[in-house]
Every structure is written in C-alpha cells, then in structure tokens.
Image (cartoon, rainbow, N blue to C red; front, side):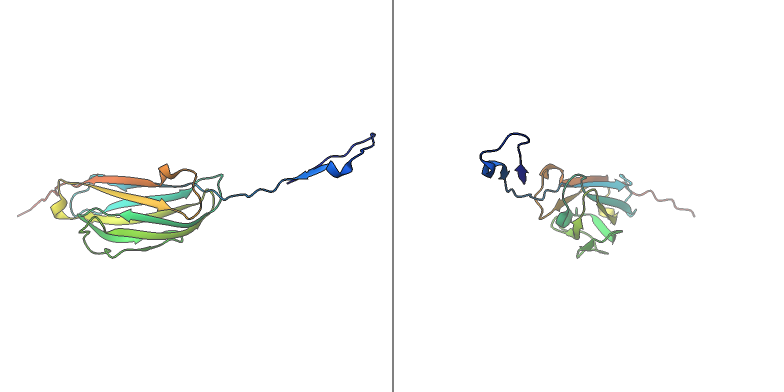
Length: 171
C-alpha cells in the first residue's frame, strides 16, 4: 500500500520523502459451521429417521478449502442411504449394515465452500430392534485447511430416543 503527498503553492525542499510504502500479507480466514437435526426425534425401532447435516461457510469470510465432514455413528443404527444434493462425496463401510462400534463413521469430502455457501448431507438410518428404549447420539465434525476464526462451531449432534414398536394383530 502506497501513500503519496504533494505540496500546492509551497515549494517542497525534499520531495524524496513525499511517499511511503508498506507491504503486508492478506491471510485467508474462513468460519465453517455445522448444524444437525433429526426427524422424527423419537422413532420406533424399525422406523427410518432422517438426519440432516448442514455445513456452512459463514458470510464475510474467504473461501474455505478442503472442507471435510466426519459423522460418528452410534451403535444401534442401520444406515440405509446417504444423499448429497451438492458436490460432496461421502464414504462409509456401513451402508445397508448395522453400526456395531463407536468407530464407524461417514466421511464426506465437501471440497471448496465459498462464503455463505452451504452443503447438506442427508443420512437415512433405521434404529435396530435391540436399541428400543435407548437414546442414541449422533455427532458430526467439520474441518478445513483454511485458517478458521471460530473452532467452537465445528461440531454438532442430534439424539434420537428409540421407541418400542407397537404391533397390531388381527385374527
């Protein structure tokens, strides 16, 4: 950045000191956030619940690079499907299978998020019958290679309380 001054009407005896330059680096900053909700919050065992994960790069910041979301799955769910309406690609080893350990995850490569851009990830999951009566907590975390201004909004969770299914038999 350079600033220059000049005198009008008065002779300048030293014009060599009439400008100054300062160099500075502009560092990119991003603030990605994650929010998570589930519908219904109290599904019966065997009833599909829809978990929606929204990843946002807040307005007023730089583009977030190399954005990744990791969804840690609770045991007691069967993952039916993962939908990514945007450009994210997700991988997991448990689609169609029951989650058996707390280390089972869904990892989504979201890539680049411009400021105020959002990526949604939808996970359809069915509670197993042996989870009836349990409260299952599902958490997600996001990260970026771009320097972040606020790491406190990079995780979110949603809980379901699995109900015992009601059976109606007609004879």
